[in-house]
Image (cartoon, rainbow, N blue to C red; front, side, top):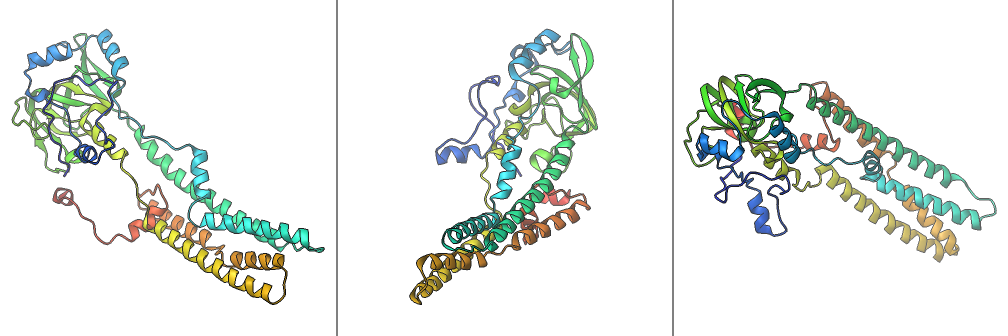
Length: 381
C-alpha cells in the first residue's frame, strides 16, 4: 500500500511556478521524497474558510472570468505528460543495443580487412565486403523490426488516453454546466455521482451515501464512505477528501476543487515515479555478459594465431588480416535476428490475449519472474 504522510507546514495554494516535491542531490532528501508527501490541510478547514481561500461561492461557484484567469495561471487539470524520446533516437537505440554493437564492430573490422587487402594484394578478395554487407543488413533490418513492433504497442496505449473523454458537472456563474475535466480550476464547485471518475482532488461539502474506490491510489479494494466531516488529520485517511483518478462507486456528493493536474495527490506520486532510475533487464545483462565473453575469446584466439602466423614467416599485414578474420568468424551473425524474432512472436501471442508489450525485452523479464509480492487488497480484488 502506498503510504502518504500529511504535510504539517505553512498553508499555501499551489503555485504553478514552484516545482513539485522531488528528490534532491542528497540521499536524505531522496529518501524523504520517496514517501510522496501530499501538502493538504484543506480537510481541516471549515466551508467558510475554504470560500475565502479559493475566492469562490458554495452555491454559485466561480465566475467564468475568474476560472479563465486560474486556468491561465495554473494550467489545465491534467497530469504532466512524461518526457518523450524522439523517434530518430529510438531508431538509433535499436541499432546500437545488445548484439547490434558487436555486429557493427564485426562489419567495421571486415571493412578494415578489405582495405588492407586491397592495398597489399594485387588481386583483392571481396569476401569481406559481402560479409560486412550481411552484418549491416542483419543489424538494420532487425533493429527496424524491433522499433516498429514497440511503436505499434506504444501507439495503442497512447490511444487509450483519448478514447473516452471525461466531463464534470460544475457550477459556473450560478448555473450547473458540464465541462471537460481539463477545464476545472481551484475553487470550482463540482457534483459527483456513482459511476463517475473523480475529476480532481475534492473537499467534500455534502454527500448522500457517497462511496469511492481508492484502489488506483492506495490499493484498498473496499469502497470507502465519504462525508463532509473531518475524521482524521491524515489527508489520505480522512473521510472528507476524494482524490483525482479514483472512482465514485455509489451515492452522490458535492465538493470544492482543492487540487488539479500535477498538484493532486496522484500527480505528485506520478512525478516521483517518473524520476525513478530504470535498471537493466535480465536479458540485457545476459547479452552484455555474452558479448564480453565472445569478445575476450575472439581477440585472444586471434592474437595467438596471428602471432603464430608471423612466427611461421607470414608478413605482419597478413597476420593482421588473419587476426580480423578470426574475430569476425566468432561474431554470431544470426543470434540478433533469432532473439528479436523470438521476442516478437511472444509479444504477438501476448497481444492476442489483450496484453500489450511496450518493450520487447520485457517479454523475457516477465518469463523469468518466479515470485510476485503483492498487497493482500490487490490479491482480493
